[in-house]
Image (cartoon, rainbow, N blue to C red; front, side, top):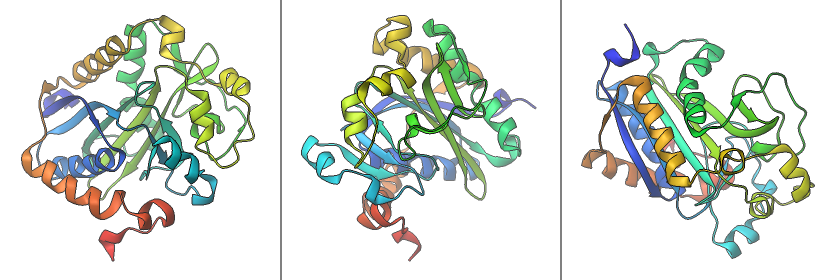
Amino acid sequence: MTLADHEWRLIPEESRDGAMQMALEEIAAQTAADGGPRTVRAYQWSPSTLSMGYRQEAESVDWAYCDREGVDVTRRQTGGGGIYHDEYADISYSIVAPADELPGDLMDCYEVLCEPILEAFHEMGVDAAFVPEKHPALHEPACYLRALHPAHDITADGRKISGNAQYRTRDAVIQHGSLSYALAPAAHLGVFADPGVSEAVFRERVTSIREQSGIERDEAVAALSDALADWCDAYVGEWREDELEAARELAEQKYATAEWTRRRTDPTEA
């Protein structure tokens, strides 16, 4: 049985705030685990958002900068460092499916779920691949400056262009990732309390789709969406109203709260 033997939907790119984007992934996991469609989607963070890694310390964030610059902050379920998702410069995606339909081994699962991401880069004209060997960290709290890992970090021209991460609920797998469409080093560094890295060093470690191929953002989003849909033979779908309602409630009760974002305490489990 292949992925295409199951029901998959593609949710076209939507702009939502960080709390809602993270809540929608949890709800999509419930839908898939309950026998509903599996989900692939591209999405945009609006306003620009810092998504903190699950174990990232709140003290590593420059909260005053984020407040002053209108940068939203939430915390992901996945580990790693924080990622500044610029409203224009970042393109994000997620893939959600029942756990028993995907490899149980983490490395094997990354290999399967990153197939459409690598294909999307190919269609964009970007020569991208998993980083061939580990690179040392430049700044631990920042995802794009952490140590690069061959399992889930994608590079082009020797520089990072995409980070990908997974987490599992009891019955589902959620993989999400960030594709660098353009560079916004001042903001990417500014959201951290002490980045200790210059913009020049950031540019030496990170590249972008626009730098590598020159295509417009909407072309890049289309290539990503098409690759995701082709990979699993997904139809163009939408969120059900009950999913949106549940996600709004979860966003308000969990992902938008200080308990979750600053202290990593899940209020919904209290």
